[in-house]
Structures are given as C-alpha cells and as structure tokens.
Picture (cartoon, rainbow, N blue to C red):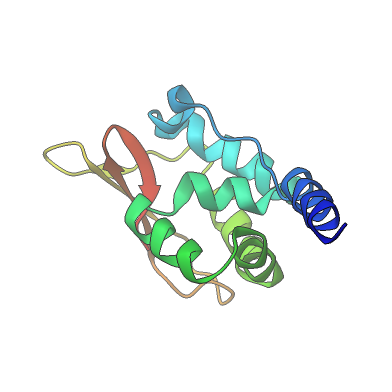
Length: 132
C-alpha cells in the first residue's frame, strides 16, 4: 500500500512540475530565444525558463542540490520579474557579438531594479544561455 501511495505521489509530482522544453531551433537563435523567454516568464513557466537559460553544468549542479520545482519557485519570487523587465527592454536591440560569435552582450538602460549595465548570453554547444 505504501508503495502504491509513493508511486501515485511521484506521478502527480511529475505532471505538476513538468515543463515544456524550449525547442533547439529557438535556443540556437537569440532573436527567437529572447521573445520565447519573455513569453514563458509572463506565463510563469519558470522551470522552462531556467532549463533554457542556465548553462548545463550550472543547471546540473543546482538541480542536484535543489529540486527543479523548488529552484523555479525561488526564482519566481523576485528574479523572474527582474529578468522579464530586462528582456522586454531588449526589443529591437542588437547585441555586441564577440569575434567568434559565441558571446552576445546587450547594453541595458539604467534601472534601479536591475543595477547591471549589460546582460550577456553565451553559446554552448550551439545553444544560447545567460551568462550573468
């Protein structure tokens, strides 16, 4: 009986905390990725945002210590709103690309809610991830 209950709880948790992955063709194109992340943030799909933006090694390390649902919940408390505001400010802006094309930096307007002056994305294995 206990094993049946555990199985049912695991199944419900899997459905509750599952998330739609951002397709690779979107993750490979920064011009498509930014609006998709804005959409996901507005929909409060924080697990999908984190999966798409956190570099793989960091994501693996973080989720080994903290379940993705908890990680996403904490992210949603404050950082998600800040990131949404920053990404919305990038509309119609072009990043500065590194010579090898694997780093893209957007200058940001002054904003007391987000004191950084730029946001940087790095391409890892053909997909873009947030660096800062």
